[in-house]
Amino acid sequence: MKKLSFLLIMLFFFLSCKSTKEMSTQETKTPFVWENANVYFLLIDRFNNGDTTNDLNFNRNKKAAKLRGFEGGDIRGIIQKLDEGYFEKLGITAIWMTPVVEQIHGGVDEGTGFTYGFHGYWAHDWSAIDPNFGTKQDLKELVEKAHAKGIRILLDAVINHTGHATEFDEKYPDDWVRSSPNCQYNSYDTNINCTLVSGLFDIKTESKDNVALPHFLVEKWKKEGRYEQEIKELDDFFAQTGYPRAPRYYIMKWLADYIVDYGIDGYRIDTAKHTTEDVWADFKKVCDAAFSTYKTKNPTKVLDNNPFFTVGEVYGYNIGAKQYYDYGDKKVNYFENGMTALINFDFRNEAKMNYENIFSKYSDILQNDLKGNTVMNYVSSHDDGWPFDKKREKPFESATKLLLAPGIAQVYYGDETARSLDIEGTTGDATLRSMMNWEDIKTKESTQNILTHWQKLGLFRKNHPAIGAGIHTQISSTPYIFSREYSSNHYTDKVVVGLDLPLGEKEIIVGTNFAEGSLVNDAYSGKIYRVQNGKVTLNTPYQIVLLEKNNK
Image (tube, rainbow, N blue to C red; front, side):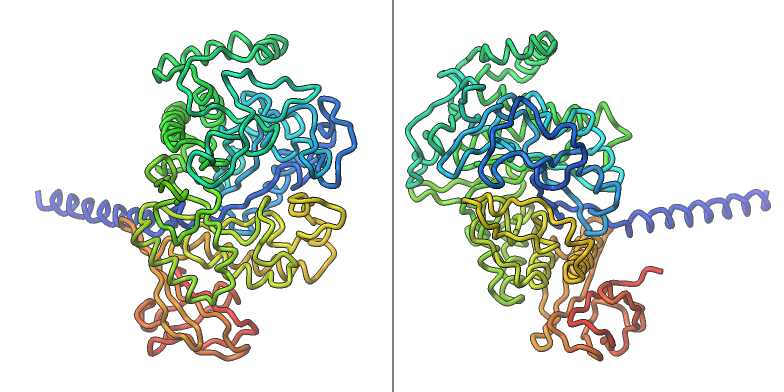
């Protein structure tokens, strides 16, 4: 009996140790936190041409103005770079791609030269992938391979407008779209019940009237042999949701299919302030339901318990406005209407401030007024003609401020390689949308050095939720040293960072962030140091120190 009791005690002790070990492993595994995401934003057509056989479709062979036609980039090109480990080395945790949906077949001149829908924002058929971008199988492969590497995929949702009508493209019916007046942008109404650009047809998103499918879509689907399937799915969607067959809900259904069919993780919402906010509240409900359906059907492919992510393009919103966007005659809280995050259009201006002013301001707002939500910061983008560093003279500073700032970091393709934003012969935003400068990475040492800096900071952000989601505390102003701390459930993350430090020997105060006598890594130099008297003494040829706990 005593022998049996002893064996039971030992068994209990073994199981307890195993349980503790498993809990410890679970607690120390770095969780993915959207508030700390490192998002890589790319124009599919301009990133990498992985399949030259799909470069020409729908007879899009008219000569376009410079950088206003299709250049050949595609989903296959993104897969190639994913396979090469390019995004992993940058510490990227999510890839946001411009819309994949089938674009108008023709082109137009909006006053900036003849242009095709290479950018993805001129939808012709939301239910199909444009063959210039790739195939359904390509998208499926991309999502699966990205997820295998812990990288989320964001697509771009356009509900506000269709593409132009051309000699090859019939406009959507009048009960779907309006063609006037043009937006004046001086009140709530003159941002919404209007068209953004002459000839760019505005969806009547405010309507809840039942409308029939456009006849050209019906004929198109019949020719493609998928009419019956599309109608069945639409019937099921409207029966399940109880929504009227209004334009906005048709489009929501088509966009939700990319969640159910491929398992994408989020949407960037285009022109969010040009519809009534209830559109996005409804869209989030549709997306959440679709995400739940995907997870139920694919339990082994579920990455974690994070909900479906939405980030809104409320043009002109800045973090200082906190929860509201002010139209002048009305304030709207988009966070209460379907948005997890909003793009912060002021970061590229505030990046001119010193580190502490940016970091402390952002931490204070995100930890209080925007707690539970966040913002997406950027230094350059696809349609912002006033980036932080248009001449690419400060690529190191750009990386340091963007990737260490509280909130989500949005890396625009080529930020990390100083891709030129000033292309001779271009008009308007075309200058921001050149092909990715892969050759520079291969041949220029200066580009390689810039890329290495972005990689080191990006990986540090990826490994530490405290950077984007944690509480910021300044430790010292001269030299500039700060800490960040993030805690959730049983997980805690602490880092200490020093910037603009002297080359060679330097001393970093860590206080109580790391235990006395413990080992810490400097993620920038790759060296290991010991904490002594609340400090770490280093000797590195860099002006930056990224301290993290050594877990080995």
